[in-house]
Image: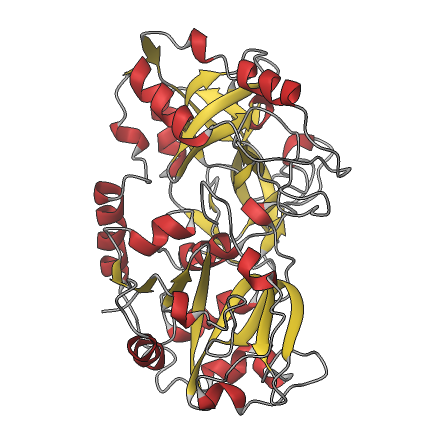
Length: 469
C-alpha cells in the first residue's frame, strides 16, 4: 500500500489495449492453463513444490539473534516505526499536529461513496471539523491503551467508505491498516465527538474508534506486550473458545503474528470461563470496561489451533509455508475484509517469523534498517533483468505501490507470491491477456505487464529488499 497517491495495485488492472513486443524469451515459453494464470498449475499452488526447489529448506536464513538485532535497528533508524517506551510524558502541539497532518490531508480529487454517488464537500468539511485540530493543547499528556479486537486504522475519524471511481467498491481511500488484539498504542488526540482516538502504534499513526481501545497505565500496557510465556499465532487466523461467561473474548479473532501472553497462575484442574483448560491454552487478553479502562481476563485457545510457543525460525521451509497459508485469501486494501493488501501480506508473514517491518510498501522499500538495492531511471532493462535473475527466496520486489515475495527461480526465471488485484501478459499470438486475481496469488515475475507502453513490472522496480546474511 502506498500513500499519499494510493495507487496500490491499480497498475495490475490497467488493461493493455495494443499488442506488445515480447522482451524476455523465458517469459513467453510458459503454458497458459484454463485459469489464465500464466505457467501455474495445481503443483505450483502447493508449498511442497517450492520447498522442493530449496537445496537446504531448513537452514537458518537469519538466526534469532540476527533478527532481534535487525528489529532493534529498525526501531532506531526508521522514522515510520515508533518506540512507545521512549515517548515522553507530554508532547508539544507541533508533534501531535504533524502526525495528524501527515496522514489526514483533505482529498483534492473526486471521491465516491458505496453507492457510486459523489461525496459532497459538506461531508469532507464535517470530517475535517471532527478532527478538532483547534483543541490540541500546547502540551498533550500521552495516554496508553491496548487494542481489544481487530480494529481499523483510518485516515480520518469516520467510518465513511470512499472510492476514487463510481464503480469501485473495494479500495476504500480512508482505510489505512488494522491492528490486532493486544497491540499497545499511545493515545495523543481525541475527535470532537469523543468517539475516535488518534493513536500511535509501533508501526503506524492513525485514527481508531475509541471502543477498540482499553486505556491503562503506560507501564501496564507496555508490560503486557512483553509478557512471557506467550503464544504466536502462526495460522492465517485463529479464534478463542466460545464463552458466554466473558463475551468480550469469546471467539475473538487473532491473526497471524499476534503475540498473546499465557496465564500460568490459574490452577490446572479448575475451569476457565466455565470450561476445563486441559485441552487449551489459557491466554490473557485485554478487554475494555464500561468506563473505558483496561482489564486483563483469561480466555481459552484450543491447543489444536495453528500457534507456536515462539516466533518460527526464519528458514526457507517456514517462509514458504507461512506465505502459502494466505494463498487464495481475498485482497483487502489496508487490511480490510479481514484480509490483507500486498504490504500487509508480506509483513504479516515475516512477523510470524519474528521479523518486524514497516507497514507500507514505500516505507518497506527504502527503510534504512533493511538491506536493499534501489533502482533509478538510469537502470536499463538489461540491468533490471540481470537483477531479477539473481533473486532468491524471500527477497521482496517493489514497484510503485506494490510488493511481491520471491518464491525462487524455476524454469529459468523468478516466481513470486503476492496479494494482487490482477495480471496482464503478452500471449504467443501477440494479444494481451488480462486476468483478475484479487487474491494472494502465485505468478511468474518477468511476463507481468505494467502499462499500455508494453513495459513490465521489472522495468518499474524501485527496490529489492533482502532478508538474508
